[in-house]
Image 1 (cartoon, rainbow, N blue to C red):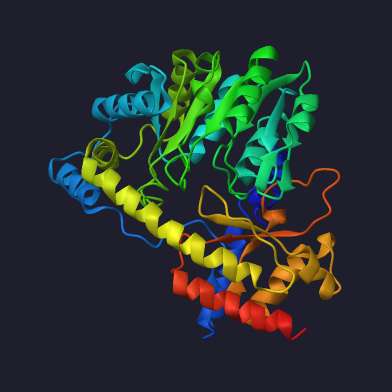
Image 2: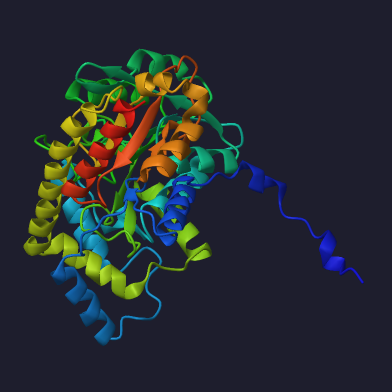
Length: 409
């Protein structure tokens, strides 16, 4: 006898909700490893570093001190104060604890911020290729996705600012900007920041400044769009501990911005998780206040730079592969158009290319298709390597395998 529950239906709005398909690639890689095959994992932006000892010690102390119950929805005062002080000093903008809402990671900031400011049909400008959760949350919350892209130039990627400016309309409500950008490794120039800020002010839009990779920069000084004239009052900064201190699994981040929208975001905290894990917040406060933690962050970034410096020339030695030397993040966005053409493939075959290379060589990576909808006019084929979770010698070995593979075609 059939249960009456057989006819229960899920919400149709789930069809608007996307995901991070990079996790599906991770499952494929794990399946090959389970079969005894060697896999070179460059598909996901996790880190193979240990969280700094002083941060772990702070978490242990907090546990021993009984910090395991509920705490304020906006975050514990010591962490909100540390975040306000840190962001104020590094961004050149004055923030207090009331400008901070602690979150279980950086990702929740995206959905909560958009939920706080969007009305049905509002347009949101966001980068594509970019973090796929932007697009997912915009669609799910009833906004209209308006992607903007990058220009692949001789010295790396830059924003197509003319095309971006033309996409503003009287329905534009939000500009999402990811300086130090996943997946392209883009870093904005001062001129780009100034022009973006002028656009935001002229069109009177909210700005979400995703600064997850703020500390993962090489030989440049990190800069925030929130520091530009007229921006602090309209910008929410997405902060996370994940990338700076190898804390991806700890799940601690924050939204920092105007008090009105921060209060709204905290109201979502109360309705969702109630609070970010109590003892984890003490660990995050330690990360921000203990100079040893920042030294550890710099050591992590120095190792990442060594990996980048070893990988880029090894990639460019692979027939048909072209890669810039990015100044931020731990990603390489590689043009494989010529290599794919040699295999009789084009831009519509990126997924087949990825699967074939994984099966034939064990090298695991993601593609342009994992990072948002394509923009009209895109014709080149790109893949992304993440070098955060693989040692330099192993990554270079993977490139050698690929070089031999493509030379033999």
